Length: 386
Image (cartoon, rainbow, N blue to C red; front, top):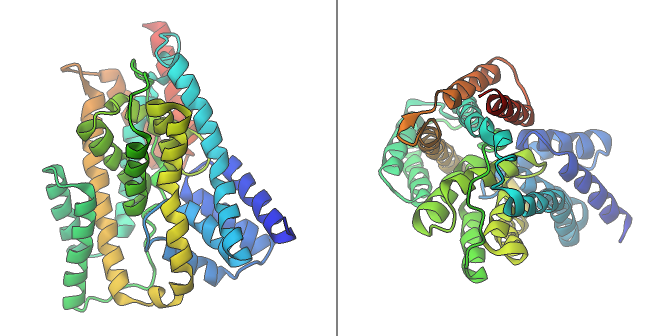
């Protein structure tokens, strides 16, 4: 391994290992490493890369790692940087998945996670609120967001909803000659502030074809605009409602583990793959969801200058972002109702925990991992006291 490849491997493995806090934190760490400390690329080009990652589906920070690897050491660097950034999260998540399948339904474990399931609603809502303030820049984008939210709530497929929103945005924004800012919104910057939930009572491995599992996550990897929030929407619709490979509680557990571990939230796929089909399932799910990002970056990187200046692509992206926000809102509502209104009654404790977490998050910028830990402690205290 040459010197550049070795540096890429060390840097991105380290970032993958300590990368708590979501894509915004990951990208800030990358900027410090490759712009400030090593001057591998200029700050201006780094910002262009951030913009470019929003033109393609997939996990934002992972694609930034892949871009940097490609710029520094070509195709081999692309692979090394991406794999090293993803690997720590995949390894840790697989460990959690093993523990979950083996011990997840033990009563002495579940109280630790009771409070966490309420925290998810507060974290999603807070991040969604902050993101909406920067993403919805005009009345036309607000209209697109509301329209897509309504059709998504009525049952329209998530992929169709996002693409529909993008094309409506292009038509409206380009026909009316609306000025489009050169800055590209980051729909993923708070996506990994997603967090959830308690271990479910059912962790048995389902008999599912590895081809089916791999293709499912490959499809998500090819169309995943909007980061972690929209990932939850895809998984809820596909795995829980349509295919019934997971229960809703297992989905929430999976997202919780994906959030609580460092690295990209998309490592949630690793956890789900293990729960459904063991180690082989974890491998095919992981490869399926991340592979498109490597291919998209390889194609896109040489085209960044032209795409960056394209008004048409900027208009499409603006509308895709607000469409993704709508899907996030729909998911938040559904999950909130499922958690707080459980067993045909109101869970007042869960509601209080969600409210308290929301107040804390709105007032102070706290890493989601600390909120998760706080929720777990409250759940444990509640179980001991009552």
